[in-house]
Image (cartoon, rainbow, N blue to C red):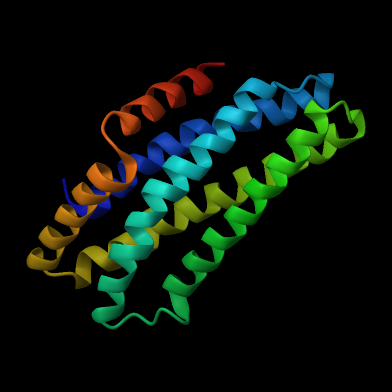
Length: 181
């Protein structure tokens, strides 16, 4: 599998979780019920899989290789993706803050919790569409087979050293569970 195929596969897992998170947010809005256990899992997934694994591969490996091959990291598509990664981190922090307030009994924060989840879902859904349909096609065109092999090795190293054995699979399993709810 090429590096961009690996990232697209991870996007499928992220999209499944986003679908589940959207259902959770809509249920909060419709019924007032906040599924704290799955919101906590969603935050964990977003921090460790989406950001810690997936975005690490992009930020530490793919984007620098693209920059070495003519893409500016300070403007254009890479800069937009990096900015959106930062926005996503801020929204996850906001979701966690709202979730803690709800967990501590602040019923008025349920609407804010649902809204922050929906903002994150919208941001990531749009972000993934741009990467899958535009950025990754650009990367496939400009990166030589040798550079792509280096990226594949770097991605494997991220999985082994930064994510850990079995963690990726655990998040995949939970993604299927949350999407099925």
